Image 1 (spheres, helix red, strand yellow):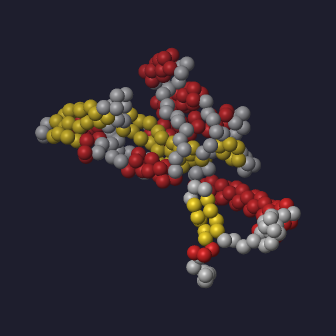
Image 2 (tube, helix red, strand yellow; image 1 turned 90 degrees about the horizontal axis):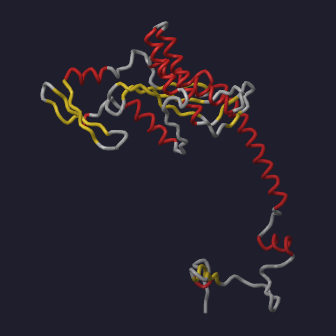
Image 3 (cartoon, rainbow, N blue to C red; image 1 turned 180 degrees about the horizontal axis):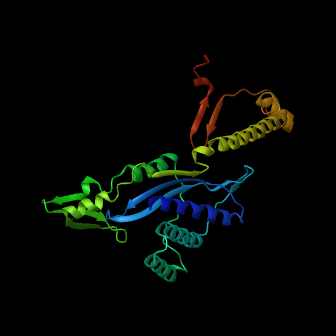
Length: 282
């Protein structure tokens, strides 16, 4: 079930990105985390994923996708998820009945998702993933009572943001916890598309080509600046550009020497008599 959940999410993402890119098939980078526990530590399977804002086409050209339609994501997610359920459950009349009811009830809007564009630092992304991979279904600090027969714990309700206490029999509590233990060899964190291990060499070649292009542009910029900005001192450049000597006194025509720099807000910034590099004698 967990693998089907992950695979359905990836199919949905690739389909949505392709549609947003006018039907062109491009390959994004996807990091996906499977989570089974909800706020109350009950069974609530869902996925978290981080995706690149675009992807590479078959020729290795990058195509940016900065916007994805929220309503379309909801409908596509419902389609691929229910399709995955059908594939693993087979021809089951009860399953088909439930799926038909879901389509009838949610067909126009699709399933609930949370898709918000976030601008985060690399460190925050790592913390985001660790939170859902390393954390147990429930923290010990949330278990507030145990009397050999029952366990009392609390969780923060999503709708109100307030803490809610729950008391359940011991064996029910154990059942709620062990249901979140993943099957052996199951990978909670999965990498798809450009982040997949077998695509590393392909991405590296594209990055090398990009960096070569950046180096060429940088060299062209340096060459341009060398042509625009003539070598020489500040005085020489001012004379060449504007035909005026900034060190020539406009009153008497004599060459001026820097004596003091004064700012109307900060006062004296530099004073030649106070400069320790020079020994000014009265």
